[in-house]
Length: 530
Image 1: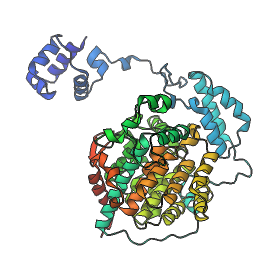
Image 2: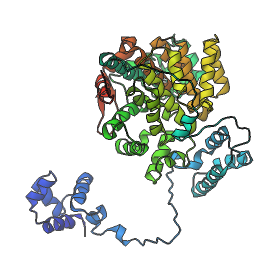
Image 3: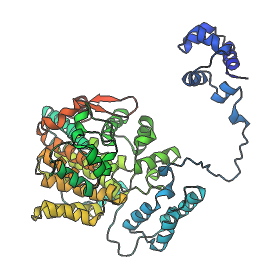
Image 4: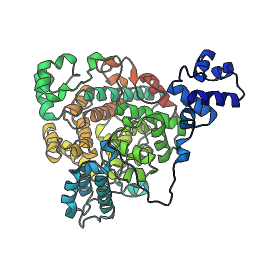
């Protein structure tokens, strides 16, 4: 039986005329007639609609039989996943075992005896054997003990995090009155977008190429967007990173799609759908509902894979995730800061709920740190106080707390901007994907840029970007914080003009939105506004 006979049979069994059938599926009677006579076939979209309406499978509709019903289901047989030739790197844990090894060592795990094994397996082709070996190495990591004398204590559970916070009490008054807060929120949204765009053009370019390029184009120290005219054919040959198509601010009429901005819109949707008491599980549902898997990167993409495979938070963050302390969560927490003005602790708690679906330890702390800073920035423009408010919400026994504190102490003791940034580059190798994308060095850049930028919007976002590492993320974060602290008026028109108050997203059902409308909607999620 072929599709034309199946459609005819389904229609007749439902006692529908061709006209009635056509009306159901928004086609002409002639189309239905052609389908049933075998003169034409429905488009795939119509086939799906017909199958859903009549409660049959596509196999049944197209082939006249349900292929699935003919399969032999051997529930007692060993469960073995099926693998194919079209591996995608992120779908195979064993494809990035070198990152896993480095991450595990940084967490203090006693796995040095397996270093060569990690290295050897990482060189194998991506096949089922490599997958099984990767599974074995993951079990080794799960069973590994912390080395004696490891100096950090870094829990992932919220109550344990709270127990290890500093005793320093940082108090803030009430949220600003509505008119002022509206301007601050607009500034935060707009500042994030400006900083993101500045860094987006040079994302992935290491400073050994970026700095000479900026000098050659008269943009060092950085003070403006990179223009299409900067990317001459000669320069693209000279600086290979620029040979890849780059989006420049002088050729857009809206902020292009970017994960740094998608997550702020997604945060707003989470509040709209689940309220302020949303759970980590709610966040995972929102991820599945609103974006395709290719919208997620590194730890987020692994978590997405884990959701599909049945792992719920916090297991979704832990299972075979080499990127569990990377920057992904740190760029997701802005909205929770926006909706808790003057309340860094609650902002950090909401950030924890969000981060815990994909990250652990310092990966979680990064989001809590940024969210708390934004909540503080709503009521104070003192950048040192803003940073301390963020630090107060993460364990004082963590690597992140130690790293950001060192930046703050150097600034307060008069160490130069250049020396601080050179120190970050000495400790972390931006040519290593792990270091380049890890939460800690990027948080240090955010902290240093806020301090040495001295409240100047353009100077601060440019400093965060020209320093390298994850340029669009760091530019977006400092832009968001300064925009919140000083309001939209602190952002010169030069920086905001390219966007025409428009933000493009890849979020299902959202698409293109007004930046000012997003800021206005944020007010609805803030209780007890005056």
